[in-house]
Length: 330
Picture 1 (cartoon, rainbow, N blue to C red):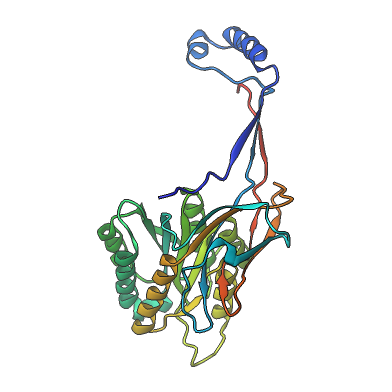
Picture 2 (spheres, one colour):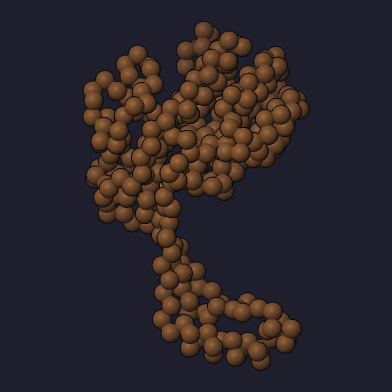
């Protein structure tokens, strides 16, 4: 199996480093107690380390007009634009990607979902059993009401994850935006050589977050996460309630989507749709043209050459800032 290319490199500016290092070390011998000087070596204060990320990695799915997933396309079947410019080149492409999955199951445990909580737990457990490949994929379980509860950190132990889901009890208000930010931070801290997804089960109503909706919208894009919203709204009463609009804003820009999950049948079907999407993702990496590591938002368009196909992919990303550290003795 081909591994994902490393997406970063270090450029070291070390002009005169040997001479300065010797001088700095000599000064440290007299500046600090002997035991401290013997056990530590400090880099000289003018040593600069620059880190620049100039490759973009994408995970996406392709569907035809009937909503069927297409998984047999090649790199040449897509036109890629980064900030409206074609990239320098594609460095990695994989059909039906087998890259490791990092999945966050994020479950609304507020008062509003008490009556359907049992079948939500059951459906989540079936999904975990079907999607996780032991030794390769990992998931975590988060519950949220007035506060955020990490029920189980990243693990490939399906039984342990299922037990964590079963331990969730409902009650309290809804800190939805805080939960999305928490899950994104957890996923962002994981291995970059992975596909990241959030499966969010909620009605989209927030009553208790410290974060704002705008924060929750940006977090998945910064963490390069695909968010699938399993909506528990009853659309027979209102075809587009406020919560549904919120879930649309959270999911669609990431390349995910809303899936109706009002009853047990709908929820089971939604989890199967997410499973199929994750199993049929393409993985692609490219070097953008005119890249600037300035933290700006860059739009991404992945357009299939063949007509009648639809790509579900995140709309863009935030270029990581070039980081410079001046390292000096404390």
